[in-house]
Length: 283
Ligand SMILES: [Zn+2]
Image 1 (cartoon, protein in one colour):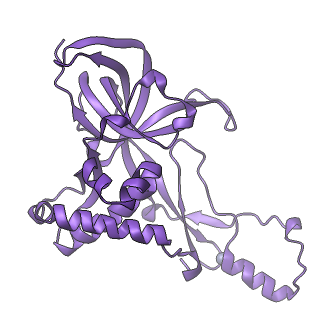
Image 2: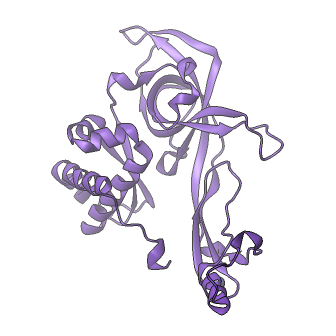
Image 3: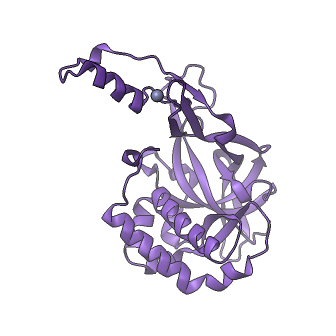
C-alpha cells in the first residue's frame, strides 16, 4: 500500500493503545510467557472486563466502540506475544462482564446495534464450521499495484474500482484541472490474488433465552425467541449443544438469511460472540 493509505492513529486511539499496554503488561505478562512453545495457530486470550473498566478511557471506549477497541487491544497483545516469542495469533476473549450488560433476547432492538450485551441462553444448535473471506487482496492488471479490501460477513464482496497510480498517470497525460470525472466510469481492472486473501473460520450458534433462580435452577427456556450468534477462530469446534451458557457479544444487524435479492432492506439481529461462559444450571 502507498503511504497515503496508511492512517495515523488518532489521539484517542493512542490513549487507548497506552491503556491496553498498561493493562496487559501489569496483569498478563506471566500468562503470556507461559504460552511460549504452544503451537496453535490462534489463541483465545481471556481478559476480565473489570480490568478494562478500571483503565480510564479504555473502559469508556470499549463500552462505546467495542469492535475498534478490541482491534487496538489485539494489536498490543500481538506485540507482547512477539516480544516473548509466542508464535500464535491472539484473539481477546473478554469475560465476566458487569450485570449492567445482562439483557434478554426478546428485548434486543435495532438501536442496540454495535453494543455489548450478555445473554443467558441455552445453546440449541451449532452449525458445521465454515469460512468467509475476511480480507481480499487485489492487484491492478496494468501496473501491479496491490489493494487490500476488508470484507463484511454476509455482504456482497467489495472490490476496488479505480487504481490510484493508473488514474494519476492518466491525469498527468491530460494536464487539465477541469477534468469532469463524473463522466468517466472506468471498468475495474483488478484481479484477486487468492494466495494472499485471508479467511476466517466461523460457526453459527442458535440460542434461546433462559431464566433461572438464584440457586441456578432452570425456571424457563423460551421456545420461540431464538437468536443466531457467530463464533470465530479458537471458539470454532469448542462448543457443544445443548448447553447452558452466558454469551457475551456485540449486537449486529444482518440481512435476513432467506433474502433472494441483494438489495433487500429487511434485517435481523444477531450476536458476534466475544466469549462464552458455562452456567452451572440444573433442570
Ligand atoms: Zn494500476
